[in-house]
Length: 349
Image 1 (cartoon, one colour):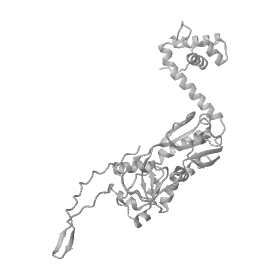
Image 2 (tube, rainbow, N blue to C red):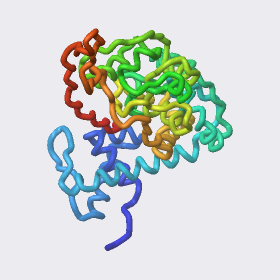
Image 3 (cartoon, rainbow, N blue to C red):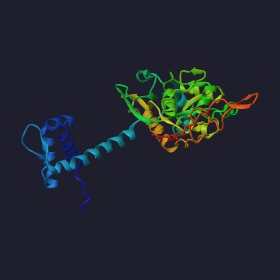
Image 4 (cartoon, rainbow, N blue to C red):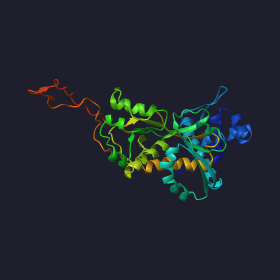
């Protein structure tokens, strides 16, 4: 097989004509005459000894040979253009402004940020703890890492990670106040990082729709605050597989129940369309995905094998009250229900 390649200019004329659908349009794009484009296409057809276009009609159509050639030519020119841009663009330096979900910023990004700054020492970072989608339209922010549904109009967005939710608590608090069953939650403060929807989602899965008595509840503006409150023995928060995984691995938090549920939303990387092509933005977004892939969260370790649901206590023998003649039964014992099946732990998305 011959390794000799066709000349470059005829290939450019062919690609432009095929993409634009006419010789005249290709001539205007390449700033040459109509005759020059026709001559180059004819020379290319002679070199292949095959027609590349079907003549006739207002718009040129590719022959089967032309259709076979076009994708390879298009990919080659795109590769040359990308390499040229990489060689001529300025070095990756300057200021990069990032808005990130507060919990994700504190517990995942900052512990790993040195990996990016060591690779790109000329980039100056400004970090903003925020989950406000309005940052996408602010000229003061370049990249956002948001928790939501990813549906932000007129912006580029890509799913970064789905996550699972589960209760977390400090070992110190559990030692002071046991948390062996769902019924024990009434003795603990429930820490919300939202308006209560996510705790409701987890409890609905854990109790199979049965209401349980809750104790005090505190509501906070975001999951970072509720997680920090749990670290300081203030109550039971709802953690997730991304932000709480490392805290559990270090023993600072534990997961008392072996049940996770999918979060209502997910983490997305997003930015304005016109910012996406900036080299400094591209390298940071590439790093976000590479860091997540190369440093996965540790497998969730729970302190309980099953959910122990609230139920009437099992009575092994009739209770008796004293009488002058001895003892008499109070009533027949309540029959203990058959243990319910252990809920399967949901796989990570």
